[in-house]
Image (cartoon, rainbow, N blue to C red; front, top):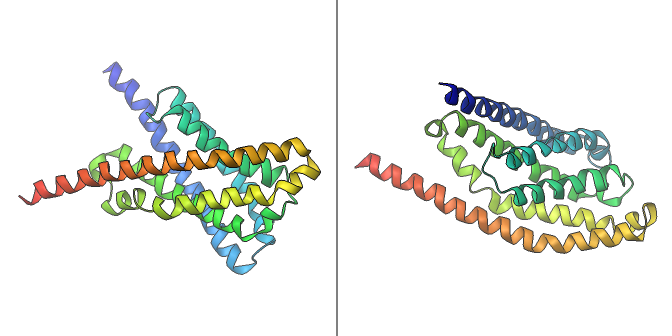
Length: 219
């Protein structure tokens, strides 16, 4: 009984974390859509950059979860994903508020790619933790299909944000910061390949398994 209680505690924590995260990212999504349509840039960035930065910063918790073994996610992959986004929200949006990247359309595609991805991902995890059999089929399909579009658009938006910020970084912080950003740009190539191919394998694994289960049910 004691072991069951210990196992249930982190599960409740993860359900709460993923549910709250899905709700928070829905705020980013609706802010981007409605403010983007109603006021556009540069007001969109001015109205949303702080809340987006705060919400994205909560993802540091995922590093803790992976490091302590609460989740089975690879620590290196988790750290890479989280810090690449923190670089954008803190290293550009907050540190370089006058960067042309912040007022460019790539900020809009960035927020849309991130928010749609995260709403689906966190909602899927929360539902899966409550019971794998209760996860809606459409949610599973979205989780392992939308990345085909959202990962490339997200990575393109991130790299374009960095590229557009190089001159501002050099003027405001120093030439070393500009060079550091250029170096980080090159890490996106292997990082994207690693993550994208991993998700393709996961899609075949998860959706392939679903087809097998469905075929058994119909027999």
